[in-house]
Length: 491
Image: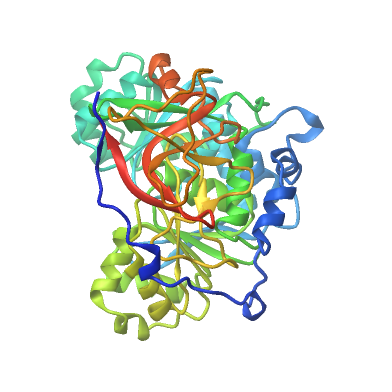
């Protein structure tokens, strides 16, 4: 096997001077002020103590940490989700309402015979029913598996079949176009719930609204153990074959910690993540992490354009914004003057996720928003942000930042064939000199690390060599510990 590089090298650090910050001038005190001290004092066990666990010490459930514990306390009437509709008006769910309605969804699953460990898929846009399905599935002890609504019938079929999907939440239009033609090939798919059946479901489907109206409140959430499977996120290997990355309920610890440090979430924030929950970013950082922190999350039900994006930021008074480089480059192309017509004074932190961010956009953010853009790095397999630029620390434009507290990163030397260089004792050879190229590797142990590829143990084992998880990404690390993305390994 020969490895190649699937991207051009990052810009030199010397070309772009660091962006310095003075945290004493910030309107909100950042959660991470002293990077080295926080890393030294951090432990995942301590992070777990910030969460509640199920009452009576019965175990853990992501949905309880994200919703029900808030609904039982002072945040019961606090706005949890704010949906910005395509026709303009917003609709909101408080934490108490979200807990009750997601519980009814869990009751629907229970009544339909969907049990603990069964896979529940979604194929729909950013509508309230999707969020109820995510949380209700977890409450029921079932496994949630999101699908991107733009997938064609074949990708949908592949994932439903590989994941042994037992239930699917979708719309009438998507069912007709993408599921009905392949339904006969999915004998394990026993329940299809239409969110817009309006009393007249398609043959072989059920009316979710009617079932929700009849369902009783759910009782105690199913008690899960930290290592019990919670989420199944599909990615693709170099052949394009879907791989189901398995994530567990303990992943919520990573969602909490990364929301605290990488996104700098505070209780009064209005938070907006533009990622679709059909992908891991939209689930981890569009649903779980902000809800765990008890903040108000904005959800845009429509497609984004420049003016709509600025309008939502301004009208919804968004304070923390997590978006993709594609969206930021779209805004940059439109010019900073487009931002000037909108009141963005509530915005205090901007994060980028999903692909490498070029340094020009980082600097442009300073001009357009008054804040630089903070790049991050992670993968479907990591389940959460691993490397980031933080609210209070300097940014080196073009760098993806430094490892999160609790995350040990390194660069592994590679030979001419693209394989890791191994010592006689079987350990990998680490790259220690500054600015030298290596494969980015992480020491296993963070809670959101994937626990396997579904039905593909061999591929999973190949990801780990000499005590490290090999990411397949090539990077450099400068003398101060900042990592710079160089390219994606191709085989």
